[in-house]
Image (cartoon, rainbow, N blue to C red; front, top):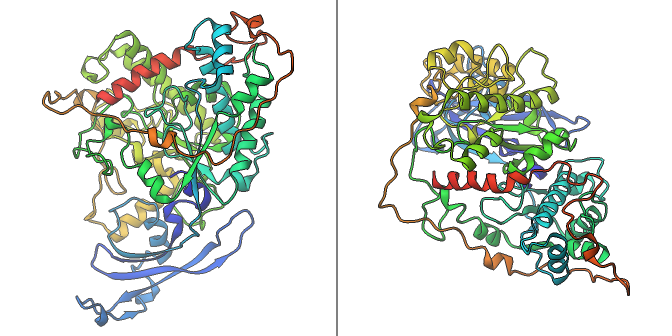
Length: 550
């Protein structure tokens, strides 16, 4: 996930050979033996996969005898191409026991963090200007302006091929993120907004791209002159070092999902049941880069809430994986939860969001409608015309209470109140929403042939027919009053670290304009900040609080 995946592709795209025990006990190893170059792809496209069978399974590896399989196939109706397709992205634990794998390695190149710190002006010129313009030392309009400028910059940097900030494809794939880097910097879970980037000597290019973006921004408020714009351009920070440093940053994440001692990798208490928070009942969807690059009203409406993972590009695979095409769209994986409905409920206290048993039918319907609008938005961009479902969900954020989408209208979510049996009749399986109908059919056919008794049965995996129950099956659990309080990670060392690229010197005219001339303005008269989400900061903070409590 993140920058490495955008640069090199998914982990499954790096596999060169697999060795495994199949469900019937066969010991095989296999991998590509023929490829072809194809325009538009960085990796050679696999055209043939061959393998061997172990004719003498023995505890002593030196006794193994690798020979041609009968008819050159592991099964009568299953080829090594089928196994290669299924094993690299068709679901873990589903196809047998993988004993070893050989991976493509890549050059170890420096990694650095790129962030903009908009939370506090931190410079006299900005502090004085925003206070005079807004009459409020907290400067909410300034912070909102910075949020929109950051989001606009991220879209151009990561996804917009026609950007005007001087970022080409080679530079674009070198940055990504695995957390809340994209969303509104004022409402991120840990308060540390950053992209992870890879490369030698390219930091200055990113700084110049940010300065160009600020200079051309339509979100600059009236009353901000050259000196203020220069100060904003200097709000970019680049923190670098080794992978050890990067891992130190990621040792302890949001304490809401980690009970680990300080300095240890994040862990949980184990299986937590189906319902853990009001976002968890909704799927994580893949949003293609081309859709994000439109900068539509819907994109900016969602961006303050999108804290997901960037996706790889289509050239970075061998053409023989079961991933839905959107997986390699270069876009973003994130929730498509009903943020507005949840924010309103959290702010007004209308419902206990931790207890679905108290939700009214009207509230559930409101959430389903909002999620349906998002699903329709994504599907329309994917060109869905009512045929095979293309697939856009992913398993990293699918909880046990998620039910899929309606068969009759896949733009609508499976009703939360429907029973397990009703879901089997009314809704596409979760597997279809992840892999897409066509890939799901092929994976199911392979599974039925190599594991007809479903020995390797994985919840919500290929061959598994389980469905989620109605949302009322997942009522709130009592909390442990003796549990110690959770504390957040300390990012002070990272914030105080060296800046790799020095700030530019800000020059002003001898007679600068008086910022007070714009007093009382919080947005320009020509409609800047047209995608106003003034409610989003306070309301989303409420959701974050609920999320952390859960």
